[in-house]
Image 1 (cartoon, one colour):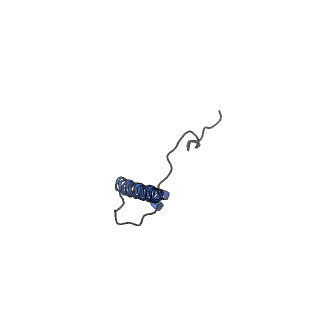
Image 2 (cartoon, rainbow, N blue to C red):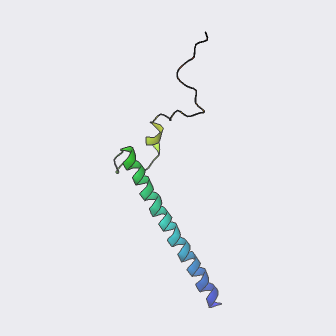
Image 3 (cartoon, helix red, strand yellow):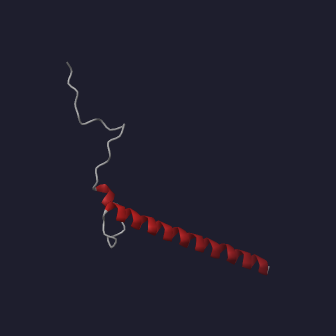
Length: 70
């Protein structure tokens, strides 16, 4: 029965370590995005800086130039 306890403990320790690594990577990516966007690194961790920027014109958005009929 002891092996079940230790296998359970090892699985949970591994899971916690993996989640911690993922959180660190996420934090590093957020900081990199802030740096690329030109926002100071001590700003709050929200995606509000993305809302201020206009969306790039793509194929789905209509062109701002109107075409007059001849």
